[in-house]
Image (cartoon, rainbow, N blue to C red; front, side, top):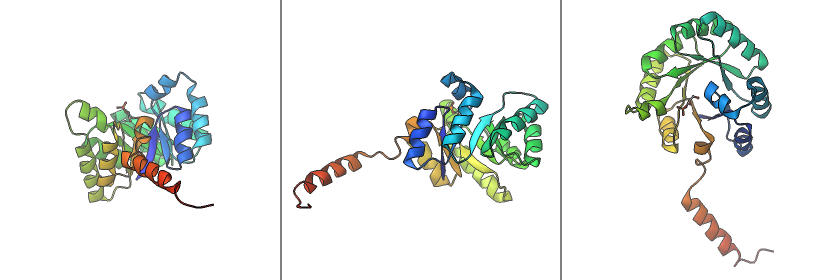
Length: 215
Ligand code: G3P
């Protein structure tokens, strides 16, 4: 499973890239707004750090404008994937952008049927938001299982990008289900290598090593 960071913070992206585990980055308008910086400037910095898929979202709501915005974003770099919302206008835009070779990540997906449509219009990625479903009392991960089953039934090539991840259990469950990608906040990614037994185990190894002649 590919691991993406869901952030527009370049310091976080740099840290995770240094660990060697970062496959890509997803951003959205809210994450970009949080940084209080120019969108294109931030994107250029991310492009310089990460050699992998970087999702940048359109903010138009009409297909023609989405297409134009998507083309402009895609021109920035071949690693840019254009994020388009799951609306009927978004479906139209995705069909056009995909047919012109621009990779689209269909976002704001909350049901398996929306994911079926994303695949039919040629989206490269589909982003189901599982945490937001959990927040309202529906088990978000269930739709990941259903989407993967539907895609398998028809041999769709669209990759399932598990989004709106809240904690490491979401990451583990996404991997158990065989999701292609999981995007997560830095606060979740930094927890993945941690285990209390690793820390105490290492402390003991180092202490015992002091008793060993090794010079
Ligand atoms: O980037 C899309 C998604 O991951 C947003 O997550 O935490 O705002 O529900 P969240």
